[in-house]
Every structure is written in C-alpha cells, then in structure tokens.
Length: 70
Image (tube, rainbow, N blue to C red; front, side, top):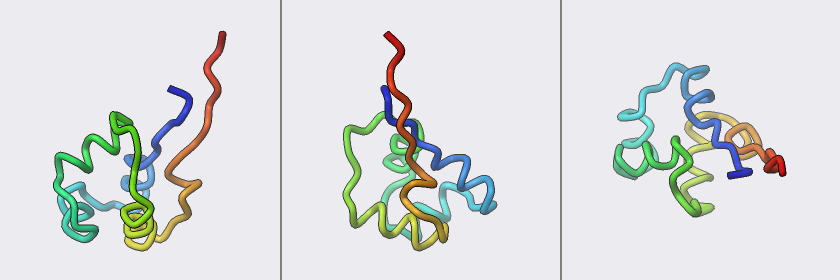
C-alpha cells in the first residue's frame, strides 16, 4: 500500500502508550492498533484532528506516501 502510517513512530517520540492515546481521543485500543498497523481503509478527519492535538503534530507527521514499485 502506498500510504505509510507512522503513528507508532510519533507515539514513541512523544513517549505515549496506546492505552493513553486511545482514551484521550475516544477510540478503542483495538481500533488504534488497526490504525497504527495501516489495516484501515480510512480515518475520520475528526479522529485525525484529535490524534494531532494530543501528539502535538501535523497530519503529515503521521502519514506518508510511498508509490508502489512496478
């Protein structure tokens, strides 16, 4: 998939655990885990906004585009 999710990297840099982030943004740890692994097809802007607010980052810090090599 050409979209890379760097949420786990940003969380490590901020030293925040999944349980804490999930509680602060109002989603389950399971859904946060799926988001971190890139196994979701989309993310609501509202959720992205909350993540960025808690982690004090920009959406571009969490997501990257890497084209498939053909």
